[in-house]
Amino acid sequence: MNLKEGIKSLCAGRLQVAILFALVAAVIGLAAWETGGLRGEVFLVSSDGAVLAAPGAEIWIVRASEKKNLAGLITEYERTLATIPVLGSSEETWRRFLLARENSCAEFALPAFRYLGPRTATTTADREGRFSVPLLPGRYIIWASGQAGTNHAEWTEEVHVYWRSYARLASPLCKCSAE
Image 1 (cartoon, rainbow, N blue to C red):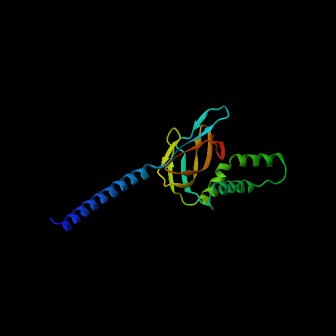
Image 2 (cartoon, helix red, strand yellow):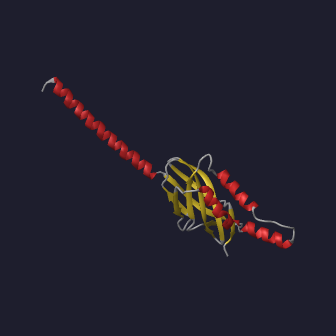
Image 3 (cartoon, rainbow, N blue to C red):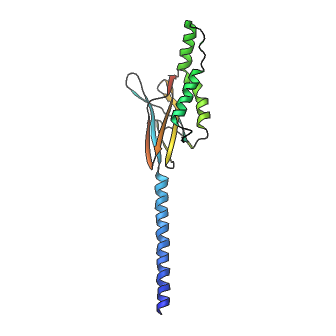
């Protein structure tokens, strides 16, 4: 074997090692990417301090942006509450207003879903109110809707997902008695 053939043989061996190294790196990178995402829990703290999980809560996750963010969602909620008519100052009118505001979860859901638009991911909380969703890194809005104890509630939070992130949805945007 002459020098030229030896160099070709050495280069071919290095190329094979480089290809093998690239494949191993790609597999490790893909495995790391697939194990990333968002985990969390949905619960409510009652007036007596008890922690009430929201088993079966529906979780919607939407990618946030400058135009679609939590502040805009809260503004939409307040706009919805402002559309509840209050005419006059009679006791019956105020009673209806307060009842409508208390039940604003149902009235807010449709405008919120319109604002949020297409979902990036959906899931359902387990019986302990926990959830897990594989997501790419980025900023997301989480919307959860479910029952915790005797209350129906709607939770929302904006989160930054890096590799593995955790969200605790404990303060509902609105809640009302489910009974």
